[in-house]
Image 1 (cartoon, rainbow, N blue to C red):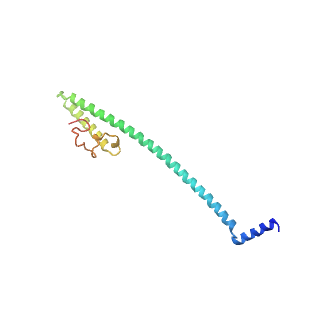
Image 2: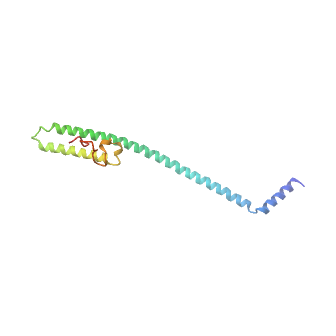
Image 3: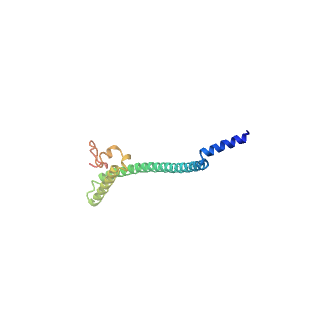
Length: 148
């Protein structure tokens, strides 16, 4: 017997045991290809999601920094408005100006308290500005603007 006849016998035996082997092998190759495509698509989705999360994190950090700066500016404005109101107390002949300045001071206080009470800005406000939701802390005798 020659080698080719042994191979022919083995091939015939294999074909007799599993006559659809070639078709099954082709289907498995196609399935493997589709699985690789699916993994590639999922990888692309993960990469896009990660990039989006990094951008959102950067935007949130920028917003937090700007909120802190805005809080400091409004606090300084409130303090200066309080000092200006106190400086104008002796001026009794200008009650409309005094009332207007007092109203502006009250509005700046309201703005500061509202910002520090808001869940969006509360994280950057000092603890004495954000006790509870909108109220001063138990030990704080002066509100956010420094008025009594």
